[in-house]
Length: 337
Image (tube, rainbow, N blue to C red; front, side, top):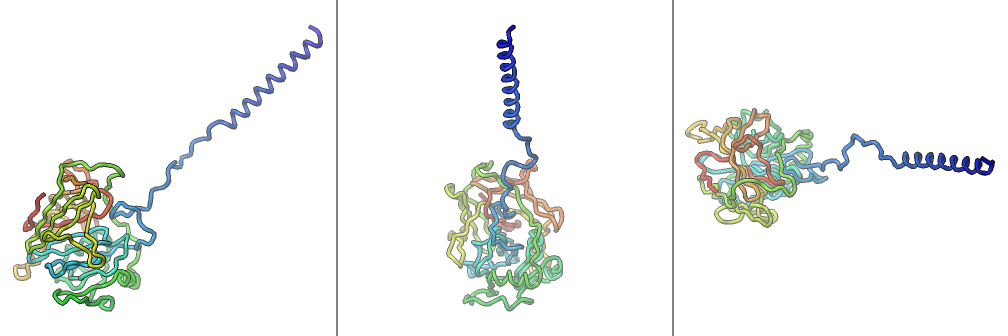
């Protein structure tokens, strides 16, 4: 082999080796990076445990519940209901009912009329680690005052005032900002581990039989009808065939879910007829969401535990994110759908 041919071969070998090295370097640069153990998606939004919706930046540090008049038609329309995250309606002696709106994501404007509390109302506040706002109490309620934080007319009368409604037996109201300020002044504004509920995912449809009209009639004439609207996926609450509204803004009161909690009861005494309701006894429960109904049971381990609502198979009810009405009823209440 002559020198010229040998030189060509040497050049070709060097070129091939160089190309291979360059390819290796480029391949190394293009190799996929090792996978990170961190989640690829954005962290979950700051959800309101009471609604399953995103919590606003100006939400309150701690929820509070207002014992609100609903003894008769004279108390309606109540003020502040449209800004609550959860609303309870509970039985009261004489066959009547009271509203117990729970505020967390929104600071309400005018609230009331504010009425007295009973032990089972105190235990609702305890379940939600909420401050109870009230005006008066039963003797049985006073005996368990120490189990919760309270803002009351007897201790904090300067933040209460009368509205122009002389028909009411307890014509006292307050404002959300005054309540929040008083909670802070009493050093009760510490963040709490507030209970939550299982929620349906966005776009997830509820299972169950169709039920688009619910009737819950308390004995003294608080005749409630919830009517479902498929377009908004909300229930509107009617009382005596008229939509329940908020006196502050004339908004109709709507909700995404209704929980009916059937409670056993007896009376403390025949004279006062005040109800002795055991909040840990368990019983029947019914959920309404997205125009569907699911039947089941409720249970509560102890007074510091949440009430758990389950279907007949033992699975917790999953609700639509939004406002929930919880209707606590006894055997005197007519309930049908």
